[in-house]
Image 1 (cartoon, rainbow, N blue to C red):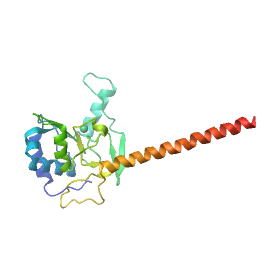
Image 2 (cartoon, rainbow, N blue to C red):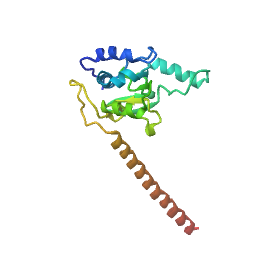
Image 3 (cartoon, rainbow, N blue to C red):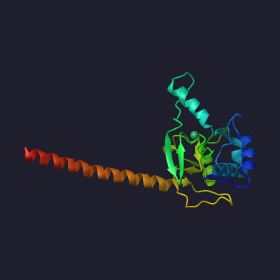
Length: 208
Ligand SMILES: [Zn+2]
């Protein structure tokens, strides 16, 4: 999704005030993510009072710098994704490196949020989810990481009037079920192959 909607620049301007340290780059946020995040802040007082943008986007050059530093084991560098690694493909778009890295379409697809005060993630997640912002790292390992789009396309939530989806959004639950099905199928096939190997071994033994 590379089209922008009416009001995209205004939403990016609006979001700058909710950066945690002030140096987070929200300018690269993909349109649907910017739209949903700006909507969540505009509608929810809890968001405005307690939730801040901790990490947004980085350019490809920045990602490469982080990755090179990590690979070289330079002090102060943490695990960083290879900018050339393929995350996945969807509708003619290939996603590379990290969801926080600027993609070939010029946009970044993830935002890390943080909360201050007495709020817990559960309540904040309810608010975010109602605006179509989903945690996409499995098993709640990264409760701060949110996306509006994955390699399977846009997740359910509000869309700008002039940027409607071309296909039905896939729910995270359905996505998980499909993955479960794939695992089940893989295990089933593996069982058959193992059995075939056993039979072939038995035939080989019999021929001796
Ligand atoms: Zn993240």
